Length: 478
Ligand SMILES: Cc1cc2nc3c(=O)[nH]c(=O)nc-3n(C[C@H](O)[C@H](O)[C@H](O)COP(=O)(O)OP(=O)(O)OC[C@H]3O[C@@H](n4cnc5c(N)ncnc54)[C@H](O)[C@@H]3O)c2cc1C
Image 1 (tube, rainbow, N blue to C red):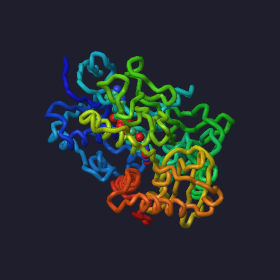
Image 2 (cartoon, rainbow, N blue to C red):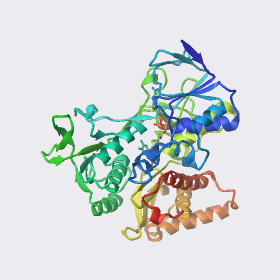
Image 3 (tube, rainbow, N blue to C red):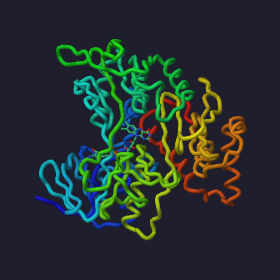
């Protein structure tokens, strides 16, 4: 039993949706030549909505409202769209083995699907507590959040827990966004993580302190510098308490676990070159793997980032998934015209009425700026390495301000006086970006890619927000 396609996209997440739209726009296939194979039962959707609009107590986002590519303010690709475009959606189908030499995939029901060109878009999976030696995370009130199935379980758990206690394990973006959603659903939250502060991979202690204080005012309790060791359960197997390493016992009506992700590379181990540092499938600037007929995009791909002098990184961000997907399709259909991907790493989050964006890399000396106040927060930080801006973070900015910091990072703006940078704060990026635009003689409509990138990012954030009603509707800026 088998089927053959010219192009196969393996995985049905964010990058699969954006790759499909790019194929359709370029008209690079005939009907029936392109398919998407996905373990999920639904067509590609904007995954970030799962920890935001999807968890709202009222007016929550639901499919089909947030299928790709609404996050980039583009077409809504419903199953009907795929049908009209002649793209086959093979849903609810897990691929269990791959043979890149024979150009064939085998599904869990034993079907062989062959291809001429494969795009690996398998993303990542949530790390499980079992991988850290803690048993029992299959209990009905322990929730992870990677796909819509997880999100439904989380929504159901929240419904049966109103007024109760939740323990959130992990202080990364899933933990932070879920904690905000739990509070909004009138659930008391305790966050537990081993680091000294939340979002330890990105936030400086000062930035983290702001968000932790904000969350504390919303009723969240932080238990830092420790980990959980076990659960107490009732006769039905439901968790009733979380036991920490220091012996503390936290009563729990539900638990949310966000302890990181692992790229889904296993089908290709031993067949494609895997980046040792980042644990992703290694690709070149055209998103092509060590096997010329195979491309990799999104969370699973480790690609060279021009801005970081070609350093190979695996980014776990939605913007990167969209851009790498489009780039791979361009490289497949028009290889001669497709240059090395020029990606400016970008990440955003929205919790309660807060909203931040980060560009670049958080390496080097940090300079903070702005108002770290609760009434009208507008603050951020620059990271300066070897005299140049390598990263910038901004909370509460306007579209122009986000554009300005993206320009400052994208251009690796030179910093002569660190003290002056601190004094000028956001004005430094705004002035520099205006100067650089006028120096390069650019008029409106001729902005460099990273400015469009920042603008698109703002649009994306707003669009995702718009699929449900939004925590910050009282404060919508754009
Ligand atoms: C809850 C949540 C909130 C997020 N919020 C943000 C945010 O605010 N900002 C941000 O920048 N990023 C955010 N992200 C990250 C962003 O969603 C990811 O970077 C993006 O989804 C990556 O896209 P992808 O296509 O590479 O992988 P995914 O979207 O994960 O898609 C992978 C697909 O492959 C399928 N698959 C995997 N293995 C197989 C197999 N063997 N057979 C068949 N199918 C398979 C999966 O089922 C899935 O459909 C968030 C992620 C999550 C989970």
